[in-house]
Image 1 (spheres, rainbow, N blue to C red):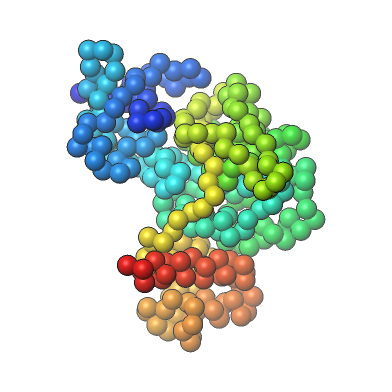
Image 2: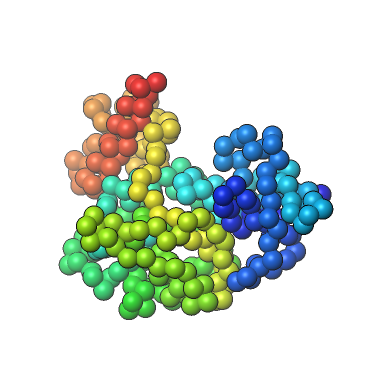
Length: 298
């Protein structure tokens, strides 16, 4: 049975690149539907998945099986990526630090090998930017300051993309498509504007799609998001999704410590000593509370 990779999905159709074919700017893709037994499973096949399919007489196909995944990024759902570049704007719209922290946790939970933070629109750079990024640098994240307008950070991003499949993810209006166009003008992605009324971006990317980059690598432009749902996470594992918290967990007196109210807590002690940031700890408590509230609801 032939195999291929899902390059994009749209309106119930899955567009597959046959194994052995090169991904180009305008690749020849096979339009496929899902076999009924697979279709009944939510999220069974997403962009980036390797699949087996049956070729039909009318030139379309039916996906029979999804092959094992290397990785899966949850919301936006993309499979088999090597890294994610989480992109936020410093201004227009103003950066939402809680959403950034929630998406970092989502990427850690998804077990993506490389997680990079890209802060776009540095031509609007506030004086406090270095102070803002310090907790993330201290946590071990690579932070890139970029500007599609000024071409800042573009070469640094290009070097990260070579030989890898990279998802660009972030809220609407932060300039993901503009950055990708600056990286490779052949991509010609549609860009949007910020609503003056609500100071939010408008969706220009409707579906995740794999795109080749001329300088090397494959990128995935994903639809903008306004939330990162983490309520399904295990509260006992949550602290482990904060890299700087990991070595502190074993210092807690209680094995079941939630790091919120218990005495002799390694994380709370580190907070009191200024070892970890208040902002990151507050984000942890916010996510923990949402998990506990969901558990109560059920």
